[in-house]
Each structure stands twice: as structure tokens, then as C-alpha cells.
Length: 238
View 1 (cartoon, one colour):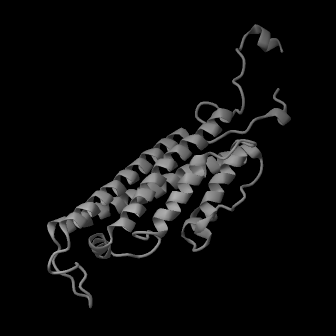
View 2: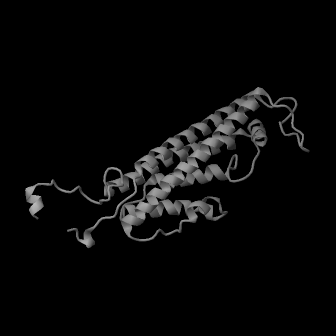
View 3: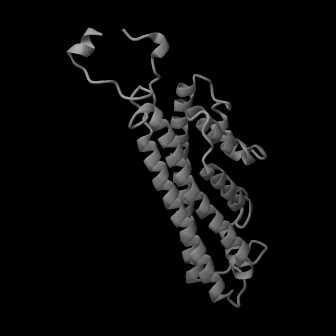
């Protein structure tokens, strides 16, 4: 009979969610790299004599082939970003639930902050990182927070609050105009977002590995700690 005091919690499988999150982060990083390349091409070509695409007063001139291509690259990048957000949140829910099971304590932030923490002004400057840090603390008590967490969050904030301003509404035509007039801030923001994607991959792998180390191969074996010994006549008599 199993002693209730030594029973170990069942954990949710996280390997699949982690692989999807890593793939989506890599895709988003590639999409933002493509944006940067296109912005460099725009800057190298120079603004047409007819001026920027958005000419004010609701008037827009026809786009050049290069500008039209940038609109397409941006649309693909936005789709990759949405996919990345969905897969990342799916992974975060899984490791958050596992952290709760491993520690026996409720999460520091309620479930609603898993969503609101990304979009609520001011709160979105610290709550998402706090959720991730809380997951690690409960999954690997006493271990140092992986550096990738701070790199991921710092680069994400820099990339989203500067350059194209992901947290603000900026039309693609306005970004094209910035590429013609002031390329450096755009490239800095793009580099930060790509760096955040790379750090995010490392972070997902680190937190998933921490839970797998305590819960078996896939974090869903229902056992924390070393595998059980071999089953045999002697074990049956114990």
C-alpha cells in the first residue's frame, strides 16, 4: 500500500507543448529577421520622389513593389507572432499547473493574469516575468533563476516599447516611412525581438527540463523522484 504522505503528484505532459513553443519562437524570430532585412532594403533604395506612402489627410500613393513586399512580410510576421503567443501560453499553462502540483501551493498570480498580464498597461511591464519566475521557483526550489528569463524579458520589453512599438498602434505605411528616414531605431527593436525569441527558446527548454527532472521523462509520469526499483519476487514480498 502506498503511504499518502509519500504519494507524488501527477504532472501534465509538457514535452509537446515545449516543442511547439520553441518552434513558434524560432518562426517568430525568423519573421522579424525578414522584417529587418526588408527595412534595410527600403533604406538603401531611398524614398521615392512622390514621398511617403501615407501622404496625410487620408491620401495614400500607390505602393512600390518593395513597399508592397514589406506589407506582405509584415502580415506574415504578425501571423507568426500570434501563433507564437498561442503556443507560448499553452506551454505556460502546462508548466504553471505542474509547478502548483510540485509545490503544493497555489500560484502567486491568479489564472486571469496569465492573459491580462500581457495587455494591461503598467502590469505588462512585470507580471509575465513574475509568472515565469514563480513557475521556476516552485519547480526547482533553491535553484537560481535561469539567466535566459531575464534576457528574454529585458529584450522583449526593449523591442516592444521602442522602434515599431508593438504595444502601440502603428500602421505599416508609417513604419515604411521610418525605414526611409530613421532606420537605426527600427533595426535595434527588431534585433531585440529576435534576441528575445532566442532567449525564450532557452528559457522554455530550461524550465521544462527542471520539471522533467522531478517528474520523469515527459513531466507527466505521475512520479517525482527516481524511478521505482525492479519488480520481482523479493519486491513483491516487501
